[in-house]
Picture: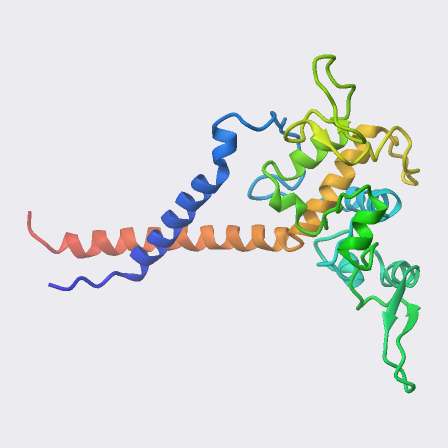
Length: 267
């Protein structure tokens, strides 16, 4: 006899599958085996099913990225207009135009068939700091600085990892032999990283009264990179909440329907 799944059963199967996938992806084999350094969990406003981004923190984080990180790391998945969209830093339209105009974008060809440089527009993507990988390696002792667009989703620990990396630079243990031009970092796998410590106390001057400490710089830029990797996070949280309300109402209706149907039968 062929069984036909009800819509509710299909919904339940989808949810169960998603939960199983989340559990499966939550811990990598390397983490389970204890091969990765410990990543301490931080407190974030965007954590949990109802989390939201702190607009001030995102704006400060963008400032840290712009003044410290952008010299080596790109954000090619973002466009300047995203900085003014709901759910993000929410800069004003005038601020977005001004930020975009600070960079030069290669465009063309013009009527003579030549490429030319022009001020950036809100519709432009963020400009990469290097024209190609070879140029990036030549400027960084052979290392290719990764694009940061999806860094908060690509690394185990996400923003916790980025924060730990930013504050994890220390003097290496006396027993550890460091390779040339490498820095010691508590969080980086293997503890040897080609990037020198990018942040320090007062690396960036804040204008909103926030203390420019190393920890605040690290936390702000980590939050900004989390938004860059998932700019629709708040929208997703709202959709998830509505879906849970739908499931709750559906469950109540199914229960009442079951009671009504079974009440007609004699026990």
